[in-house]
Image 1 (cartoon, helix red, strand yellow):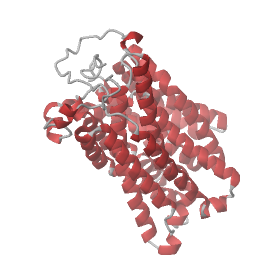
Image 2 (tube, helix red, strand yellow):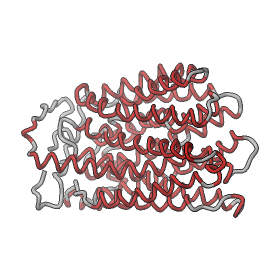
Image 3 (cartoon, rainbow, N blue to C red):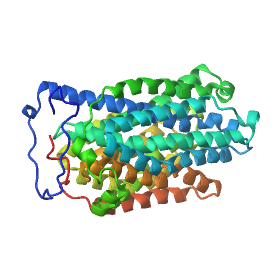
Length: 455
């Protein structure tokens, strides 16, 4: 950590020459002064608070879809309405690779802080725009077109948010506990989902179904826009983690610099993130619709189950992150992908016939526990594979591409297969992608090349 007068935190060094079999010693508390620990922990809180708001704004769309779908996509079949809203949700993910590239380049060339400020500001604007959108009844086909435009704008923002925040939190986390501290990215990411569900649950208690469909669904988007202003203020106080030298490098934030020297790392991250993203969105955003549309539960019961399950899932992240500091990132990834490939199919098949909300909740939590081996270290396991001058770009772009192709399309594929009478094929699809993630996880080195020696 630099002195208080310095504008930058201690930046990671380029450790490309490190030997993969070199095992760092476990750091002692004496490596950090009390002031340094406080400063780094505050940086984690500041970065992750903005992350929470970003993901609340993004996910509130998924949890409110069952109420606003008729307002934008009038149709007699509820499955068709949800399919249309899921298509717009997936379209937002298609902007993520562009966001991952754009904000990754900004973060590597102009600093992590600048990138994070721009992304949260864009999310605020997108959420506010959705809150005031006119419906199909008012302006016809222009309504779903504008909804799509807003989602594309938000997708661009979130595409840059993940990579930059993951990189920043990995760089400021205390050495030897990076898995634990980096896990708070998903604590706040899941927290954003949890708050989105919680807001919907509260509105369900205060408003009738007709009121929710008429105007109540707009309230969470207004809340998200206001919260983004607070996150913006918090992020303004963060200190930069990159050095001026790293930002001035001719390869900083460049595609040439990324693919010339780190193509193998990029492909590896892409491979295991595909399965991780697919399983994550299957058991989080899609699960509420699955409980209503396939299991046959009412919307309020489904929201209650998801609120409790997401709360448990959020609490799991630091535990699994701390576990990775002990057993290693590679071991955590292998546990995630192997258990996911073997257990996803029976979990989803049993869930479909679950007659009890308690059993349904336990099955979902079991699936979330398996995903926690991955999500708790999702940021750090990627960040450790790239040097600082292309770290945000490498993390953000690989994550965004995998998310757009597999995570964002999870609902659309699941609902599409259900609409043609082959819902079980989706279970096999998820399991197959996790088997592929296992193969890519085998490619992870036992000792990462970057970050582990950095103070």
